[in-house]
Image (tube, rainbow, N blue to C red; front, top):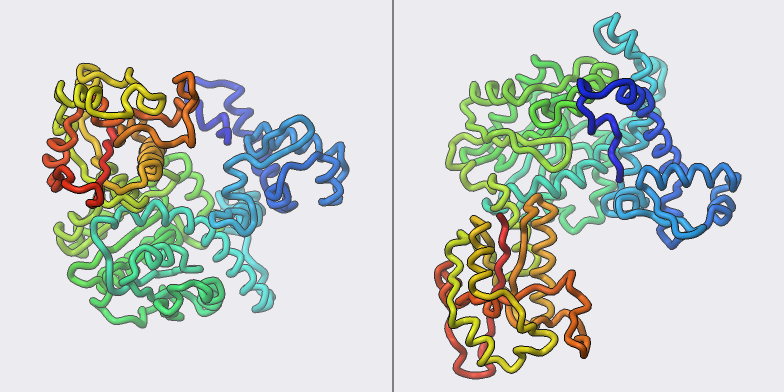
Length: 517
């Protein structure tokens, strides 16, 4: 999806165009709001449609719809082939109702808070929020608004927790979670899915927890959830020193400093000696533009909410004798602070991006994933010769004779500092596809130099082209042994046991290498 132009410009180097882009930024959001409200992306998920077909389904005028679809294509939300329109990948993943990562409820909640933004001038004169809910609002109306907010935050949290859980891959969690102001419980749900030894206490207002129970009732981990109705600004009805993980997700920005200090006191008191406090929120140190705008959003939409600097929070946690990590940015617009009663607790976490990547790749089905320095990869002359003269596949289309020479392999390894040794099992094609997927995951995680070498002749395609010219160069990769790598020596350096097979029926191990940087 194309980003807003003004986010890519230096204001000092720009001019009138920058100001115009700022002034028309709401055009983007209004187009998105309307498309989500119409259910247009959900309609297209079953297959491409023409403007006339969509107009009939949505009761719209074909000509007006055609112009609207053109704008959605320009925004990167739709693609067009001839007269037929399709969802793009981002729309397919996030804007189709019923999808795992559906964000429509979160998007429409942001439309619902627009009226308060129109009162920004009044807020600036008053020094705080001026647009309040009606005093005569019926309880059912309040409950509906609370559920709408919880549903919106749940959409966001389901995506965010996928970025959060990998930090804990090195510290297998078990025991008790306390999710404070949990909303619909999506953050706890992510931990419960990954760590079967965990149980979660969700603490929020009764109306919110009723909705959370409805959402979670069909989940296999529902029996590991306990619902604790409470106003978190009042004393918490939970035991001190009981919890292995206390979660404050999107809570800090909702309160004034005096309130926040009390919440941090209670959160610290609930931790076990080896427990971890997780604070997930917006921080100006991570994403200054979004944090500043979100702070304004708190200004016009809450009584006293604001975005706090990470430095202030770290000072507050230190006063409670908690050790903290540095600010841990997520790939999106928020970040984490993790705290514990001793530094040893935090050392168990996957704070290094490479460690988090290794943990994520391990979950793809490899028997093991071992970080090793690039210099530990042993390159020898005889391995290439053994490949050429000792393998019946050499020179065939699926085992190209122009693979990397030992000299080229050494030169390539000189441009990397670390890599991952991936261990798996047959079948060969499945292992190689998994290695390819690991390379793609690494690239998307920011390791743009990621490159994989695998085991054995290529087994991706059912049959190779008879002329020996590969038709799948996008996915083909060299083998370790064909590139001059002494697999036995390299694997043993990484601490694995590896020996030659004495019988054809013995257990086979496959190894690949993922070069990272």
